[in-house]
Length: 483
Image (cartoon, rainbow, N blue to C red; front, side, top):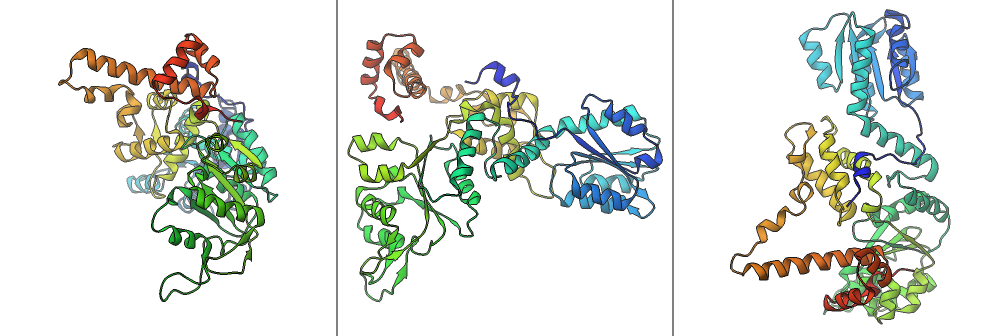
């Protein structure tokens, strides 16, 4: 579980790319400098720009990224409604506050439907405007932070696919930026759901390749009567082994200059590992039934949720292929080790599952604390599913604790539904204790990276006791070791 300190504060060591920036349109003409001075004196200490005509406003909007825009509804040569539409078309989380001499109900309804945060009728007290601006900023703080973080990552790492404030992730992204310009084979390791496919996409994008990222799901290659069909789909056919078959290109053959991502490469059966080894070694594609090989200049990225060298030791993975794939290895940390990323990731998933013409939902402070405190065994994939569920369930734009999935609200609540009254209570207690003990040991071994002594220290037991329990629960320490 994340600590209370993590739940209460999600501050990051990532440098802030910018302070809050506000654009006042027409304010200097209607009330010289008063609004500006009041906002600059507020608790946010924003950077405030002023435009007193339409041309200046449009130019400033194009030059800078604003979080908040306060604009008059009508000025000479200026249409506030059209300006609001221009701001909304930028698809950025800008809060727009309309200031007008007089507003009819129809006007107010229209601008609110267009996404304005509020409509203020003159005369507007400067301190009241400051309160409205600060409220707007608080409500959209996560969206603003997400927008700024994407800019920061794009400038530093040439990627917007991966969003993170975690320093370990930034180290990985820094290495990614250097590797993207080479043709080195890359191996991505990490628990299921940690974002290996996203990182592969980021590597591909950073390489500047015009080709596509082609994903090969290695779990689909199983020993069966259709082996030759699966192999042919990957490599292509020169002389198809079935009547009426025509020569066909395979997934690899048509991927010249592209990136091939072998997802969960540890699941490949041995017969397919031999094929992949030849491809990685020679970069040559040999269609089934043909004598000619095709030179194929592709980048190869592979991912695995199980340490490959452990599979090599068990004879389940070819050691030659392991060394060919393990040129550069990047290990992605689980989500529970990057709790500072949970709020910003949740905001990005809300953005993903919100229709463009609808206002974005947001989490209440209590709901966000629940998200940060959860240990997320399913990592990013589980978080994304939880956010998607909350967006669908929440009846208003504010997601409350009751809108979160049950396993997030009360992780142990599900045990009540599994109580078996046909079994004596001592048997039920023994089973529940064993289940909890095994889960604890697995988590402790993961933290200790397979070191039994370190695991014993975490559990507060002797090394002999831990070894005995690992044997009883059939937990193999080799499954947790990494290089």
